[in-house]
Length: 137
Image: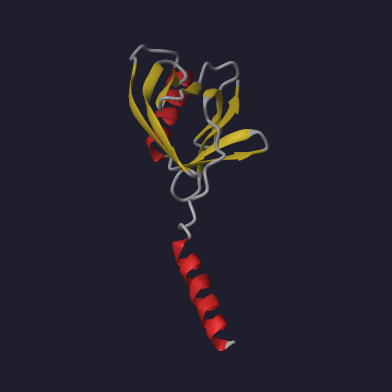
């Protein structure tokens, strides 16, 4: 009887050793599409501002930073979100939009994570401070 338990125990240990390691949980962060920027670095955007971001399926980022068109790339790994702005056009606008544009552009490289909260996409820095609040268009 004890031999049977020994064989059964060895078989169970062998099966346990064959199990694969758990896979990291996939992100449910769905950013694909166009989002209106509602808040940039704690300040609400100007009403009817064209500030928006578009996340393409191929990892490309485009949009309007309030005055100029912007472009770059992004990547998602779980809850980690990295945005790499590559550049923007350089036209001049009214001062209020230019100041808002500076906040948007300053926020983008600080973003390290994203999360959904009450239908809004919160883009946050490494300390958990919300840099941008977006709503889906």
